[in-house]
Length: 497
Image 1 (spheres, helix red, strand yellow):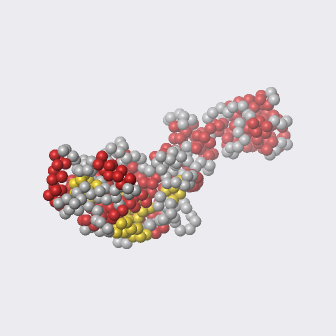
Image 2 (cartoon, one colour):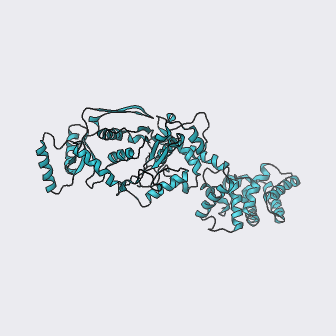
Image 3 (cartoon, rainbow, N blue to C red):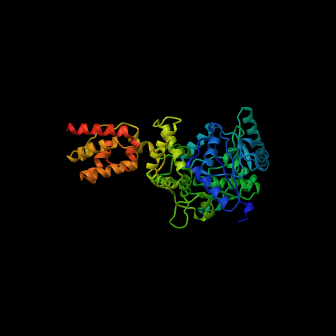
């Protein structure tokens, strides 16, 4: 491909935060542009003012940057074909709208919503698919003008509809799906290209924007397939060449087998939510790229730079992509384990602070203690918010030993081990994991008690849990005073059995 001609875009609406599906669209366009050394453009489609949210654009761009993406042109990087917000392009659209009106390829429509609904009800009664019925059918030009004048006199505001050619096939060679065809008679009749408030609709504005911005390829979600024939009609009306289209497969939930729905609260679907949980951006990006695209071989962990180099649009899948929460956690865990200690420390410490387990602006001693704690759990964490649950024992006083744990230490050797352990750690000059391990081994040597009967009473007494990280490290984190207090409580409990 000629690199000068490759221009792709991601065109979000600022109606909410960056969704997983939208992030995937941005990523695949980005990878295509960077692989072929083309241009990646951001365009904000903000004409649906009722649905736009405050800071919606900022959220989109901030989260794309967090994932590691950059772009060549956009609202914050003006180029030669701006503006890059649709709301700022209104004047650009007007002569093209007028051209279609002048050529009879579009017309003003005055049917009210009540009239349109009455038509739809009648069509349903006839077992027809609801569609727009041409309101000037059988009229002469003079009659049409008279009807329009009457509507204007009655204060009706028109929409502008595109005149859909009859009995015509529109097809394209989709970069993902292959050959796709639509009959013009099946798309629901003449469609609105300008609303009554003068704002162009998506299917019209997107064509003008893509043409004027010289977009060569359009990768987007499968839900846009039905829009494509309408857009091809507009390209045809102006005599323009359409870009090449690629419609990416749906994303389905592994748990339900259904399309990922924003109403499904069992799946976190917004990038912002994963950021707040302490996921790593490189890991989330890695996971999203694998939703509907597969590299060669079995390896699945790659950097963005590696993905750019190996990217091949021919490997985009026609089959639905499965959103698997467990796989995302596994991928993120791989990144956590290989990440720089300071990166993990900063993110996990923030989670501890936000949960109230560590105070804001902790002193140096607390930070160093937190570093040891986080390192203990680094290999296990799938995302940083898990540190609060995993390390709960270090922040909340355990209840009395009970259940299986109590049964485990209800024997004659447990008090022996605990008394020896308590006596010896009181006098340790340095209370750290090395000295603690040496103490436990010395108890084994002196008492002859070993294995489970040695280690489990200490673990259960100190943490009131039967499982956890390495015992010497856990005891160091609990601290000498708390360890002695917990052991004394457990000995008293055993004496009262």
